[in-house]
Image (cartoon, rainbow, N blue to C red; front, side):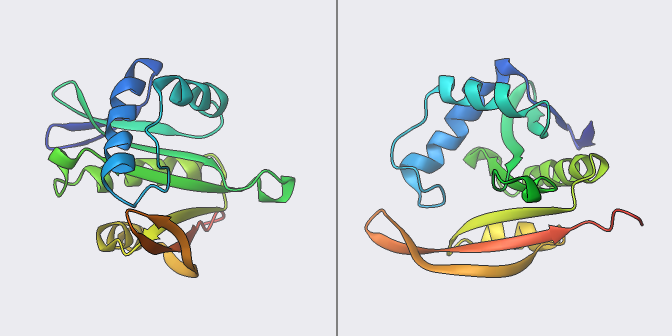
Amino acid sequence: MSQRSGLRVRPATENDLPEVCDIVNHYIENSFVNFRTEPQAVDEWRTDWRRLHSQFPWLVAVDDDRVVGVAYAAPFHGRAAYQWTAEATVYVDPSSQRRGVGDALYTELLARLRSQGFHSVIGVIALPNDPSVRLHERHGFIQVGRLVEAGYKLGAWHDVGFWQRTFNIAG
């Protein structure tokens, strides 16, 4: 468990999922950083959490017993050769941005992925998104690819960038 000035990072529980859903739905409804166009239901989150949380870390940042951010990992792709690469995602409640929530979540998420033996982590970022790019690069990710005009949302085409971090498992 990570702690930073009153902020706690801990494993997500099923009870956290309504708040997680609210945070992510804000981005679905009000921005292009998530390419979904319709809000998610809590049941979708429950299904994914139940399917994935025993193999991949799912974390929340909590401030005064309120979930203010979420970071989780999932399979990068379903084929067996990708089993040591995870895709990481982080969302921070808009009212808690620029307070170190994303950094605290990613520090803990990456430490857990490394300790579980993952070899690399992929961050997929809808562009432009300078805050997310800076977050990933602070945590050792480097840009490894870009899809041009891959998604259309809120009246504009958006590129998708791929950032990757590898772990030196032996060191």
